[in-house]
Image 1 (tube, rainbow, N blue to C red):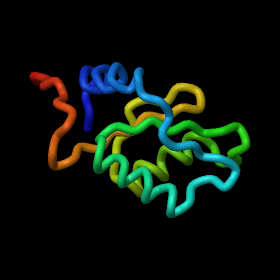
Image 2: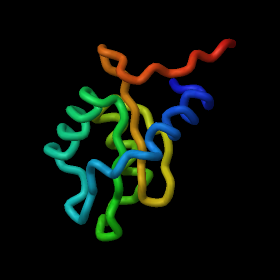
Image 3: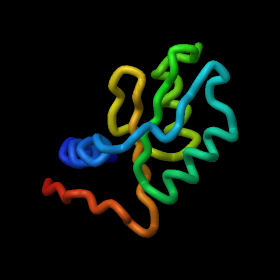
Image 4: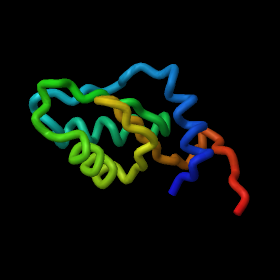
Length: 99
């Protein structure tokens, strides 16, 4: 689970990213989920936009993507979702939080 400081750091990194995937009226397909999972494996951070033509609610989409891709939601602003999943190569070094 990500801390607030780590989410803030990831949001700052995602600010410069363009939306890599768009979810339209077909909703989530197995092909789209595997594409998101492969992208997360390579880059650890992905930005997904949900088009207005999508009938599925944003909350359902974020739950489905998180469970299917085993990732965490970093931020949801409007129709834009940012997901993070740590890979074995650790391309993004998260700030450590003391407890």
